[in-house]
Amino acid sequence: MCRNIRQLHNFEPPATGEEVRAAALQYVRKVAGTTKPSARNQEAFDRAVAAVAHATEHLLDDLVTAAPPKDREVEAARARERAARRYAS
Image (tube, rainbow, N blue to C red; front, top):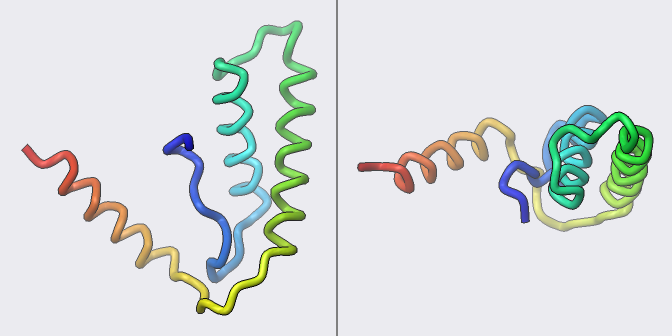
C-alpha cells in the first residue's frame, strides 16, 4: 500500500471529506503512475479521484467495529516515534 494513504476508519472525529479525497488522490496517482496527468488525461484522472472518494465514503459509512475510536493525536505521536526509530542514525 502507498505509505501516503492513511487509515481513515475508526477515528474520533471521523475522517473529513478532504481526508477522503486526499487518500483517493494518492491512490489514483499510484495506480496511474503519475502525480500530474497530462491535459488530455486530466478529466479521466479527476473522474477517477471522485469515484474512489465516493466509494471510500460509502465504505467508511458501512464499516462497523466494536473497538473504541482512536485518537488522532495519539496515533500521530506513535507514527512519529516509529519514524524516529526507523530513521535513527
